[in-house]
Amino acid sequence: MTSEQTTWAKRFRWISLIEGTSFILLLFIAMPLKYTMDMPEPVTYIGWAHGVLFLLYIYLVFPTARSLKWGFSRTLFALMASILPFGPFIFDRNLKKSQHVDF
Image (tube, rainbow, N blue to C red):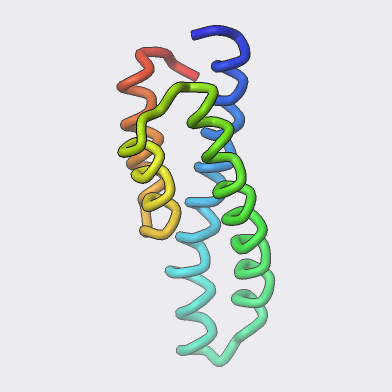
């Protein structure tokens, strides 16, 4: 991988893992607090952060795919991973295996 490709891969990986973590926090901590303890504030803040990170993730998929020469199926997998719980983590593991480098 060139240094530019490594930069894109690292950038995408960091955003992917942070976005995935925010989604897990939203689903498994904030939402239960809202509906079981009548505490809507965590959903407000974590949801807002997750929304921003989700948009950043989607925004970075396409230039990363272009830089790393992903095919249609890998790009689609990256997009689908953003809407599934634990999807970004699974995609990250798949990406590390296929690129044969440790970011």
